[in-house]
Amino acid sequence: MTNSADFRIPGYDGGPFTQRPDLDDPLYWLTHLYSCSHSEQADELLFGADLDAADQFYRRTMAQDGWPLITLTLARDHQLHIVHRNLADDSGTDYLLHHPTWERAELLAVDDGHFMGPGLSWPELAAAADHTPGGDATSDPHARLLLLLPALGDDALPPDAVGRLASALRARTRVEDPDALATALLEGQGQCGPVSWSTIDRGVRVSGGGLSFRNPANDFALPAHRLARVSAALTP
Image 1 (cartoon, rainbow, N blue to C red):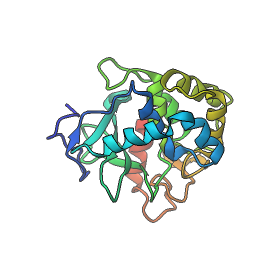
Image 2 (image 1 turned 90 degrees about the vertical axis):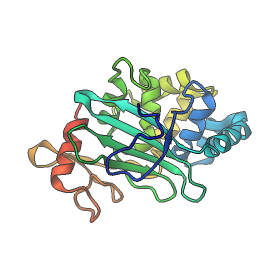
Image 3 (image 1 turned 60 degrees about the horizontal axis):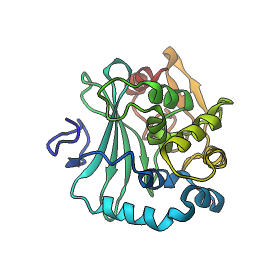
Image 4 (image 1 turned 180 degrees about the vertical axis):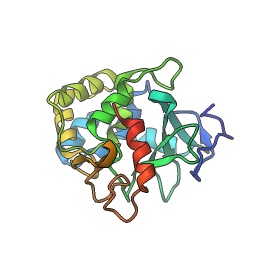
């Protein structure tokens, strides 16, 4: 079980892990999406009158002994782990992709004060949100979309992106104006902002982001064969 204290993610030093957060608590989503907000307007739309309550929720989460872990099952037995690091001086959220045949999980994005990413394009995020096998940590496409949003960076969003995000916000949060918040969040797109995506040799999708592990031009990028398997795993 991925919420067990003795569970390990291959190649990842974090843990011990604890049970996933309460995804039915609207306050969770405010703290999770905070890094996606980069303007006073977006902050006000996100938190409204719940700022103090969200801060208290965050402090309670940080006080846990283990690191809250959410695991989403994707197509072809791949798993996407979302790890909330409960470290006083290095808190953040890590996004890791794994498959049982891989020797290690691949770090897609790091959402903290030293952001690395993006890890997902919009088509990849939407496909992961829509893949809802029975028995998964969450089978709600709205929740899955919001969980993955901080790892997004894409400058070619489809026309329905704002509407889809607004529907997710309406379903999982208590924000007063989901449409306005969705517009603000997708205009800013978290810490990396919108970036380009392209297809290179053998159909591998890569990012143009200067902080992305999936950009082969970066010195810290994943090696070519690992870029290829990440792309194949996330291909809609």
